[in-house]
Image (cartoon, rainbow, N blue to C red; front, side, top):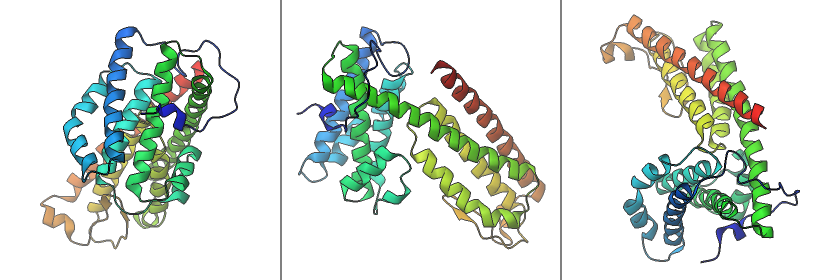
Length: 297
């Protein structure tokens, strides 16, 4: 099988000398072996994906998940773990994906390019993204093992640039979440929310879909989920109002829905406030992580 790094689009950037990875200290021998074992499993998934055998990818995935996620979770935080966990998550998502790919909605240039090149459905695009992240992880592992060939060095420069993109997208997602929090805390009326919320959440979800599976993105996704739950209960507490909001898994209540749940309006209000407080805490933690990363640049 050819090296995955050969699939990367190389950038003509200056080489960052003597850098073991784009972020964090160099992994030790034990950590390298653990990461390489995860990479080997991802290669099995890719080989199955390229196979012409019926349902080869699904069969390979059933054999590897959820154990693959557990193996990734045990790795040390850093670029290698970020890219391996992202690849693992994307392959798993490809199992359930259907429909066509929305290239216009891809905010990350590397993903938009893959979308144009894939020329297929969403599942194919997710697998292509997984290959990309696995290739970045492989390049970082080769570098840590002492490889200094041109392909590896160019790939390391590419990884460094992509980590900068990670931070820029995360900061934009953080701004979107803060604006949403300000609107809710400012007493925005439900009617106004029903008009503006779908567009804001759609943009936020595009940003989150462009982020890798690292600590910052995890906090931002948890904050988004907490907002979704808080808004769900806020709208459930007002069954007499005609609201039209349908974004992902959170739907506005139809009139009379709250009584059918067997809840009182003040119970829903308390649930809404608790979820919104949780979202604000998660936003604060994500902001702290981003500030730390920016200080280390």
